[in-house]
Image (cartoon, rainbow, N blue to C red; front, side, top):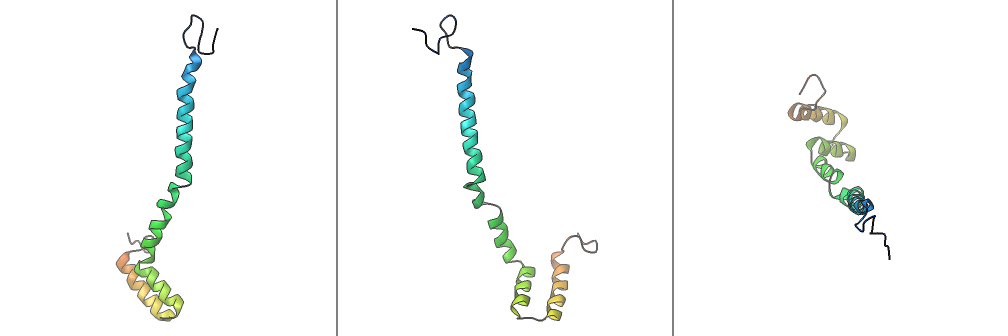
Amino acid sequence: METLAQFGDGGPGPWILLFPVIWALVIGGGIALLRRTVWRGRRGPARRGAVEDNSPITVLGHRFASGEIDEDEYWRRLSVLDEQFGRTGKGGAA
């Protein structure tokens, strides 16, 4: 009885090389799917948001938005913070 694993003189045919390729595609697809869905939430925007919420400029903006300080005080303090923390792209500051 001849089976699919027999080729010509009784050995496995070249199609047997297709199995490792199929397994590689299945494993690679699973990893790609996990990276795009499950693992994405553990890094990136969540960490950056926590750091930005504690920056002095953000705290100043929250104070201005809540009415704790007026507009003149906001702009005066913002200019001082710009000098200390060096926002890039303004007046040649690096």
